[in-house]
Image (cartoon, rainbow, N blue to C red; front, side, top):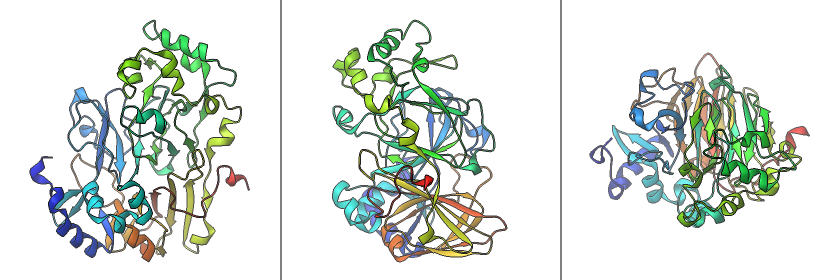
Length: 415
């Protein structure tokens, strides 16, 4: 895609107004594909196999699809719009980022717009054949040292995108209680001496379809091979602490890429970016594991709305997500307290005036009818969703910070 094919930011207002009017406050989005040079695509996110290396083999395979994103992917050699979602209307495209800059509070709500002046979160499908390196995402104070933002994130494993486990259906999280900083230091010192053994200091949890996890910043994790829906903060910072994965070498540069240059060999500083207490928590699963909770106030005959990502990170509600299932022939009015990014995972139907259809296969650059941004105004007014197909219509939607006053806490699924 070139600049000439996109409505520029200073010309977005007229087409945005027409799109919102025609869509009743909804914006149709096109697929946003992101490659990773150090990973092996899992082939479950509906991208045509011939297009897995559409950015070029040297860029790596496409293993991610980002949703309602105004966050740029932090990839070397990236194309100018990598990670950014596009709206499409009347055969034209414009960035969701530009739409929100123009529409402000009408699109994301007054509180988010006043505090952030943007849509500060995003979500994605993350799909790999095997595990990825044990890594962490910086906290907000550490990321600020290089002019970036921290990145808490969350997981949900949608059954519709996990027909197979792929190679390693387990995720290492945190460090074994009792692990010392000296043990971790030795792993870093052994970076060029073969596999550095960091997984010997961690614990793997078997992944279960239809469940999820919260991952605070500064917590080590090596995601396994289930396709994962990941609501998260709008940042792409990370530091890889594992040097060899399935025989693939991870360069030191991917450990320190989001750290001050003068600290790239400072092991005390690097280890200090970890939240040590959270990593060695003796009740790690209890503090971070999620199972769906039915929202009874927004469920009725023919449809069920479930919380799939909930709780807080360091006391803050930064993001959340729900899964709506509508049975064949049923409809409901979706009324939320905040804007959201919607992706259809099963079935067909309509949301407001826009059709919904779950694709079986997507060519790179092809437009689909499965993704929508629900503006704040539309969410508050209510949007009718109808299942017009023969199977369940299922959609995931994620929300920005402080959207809900009644969000469950981690562990509430046990009640």
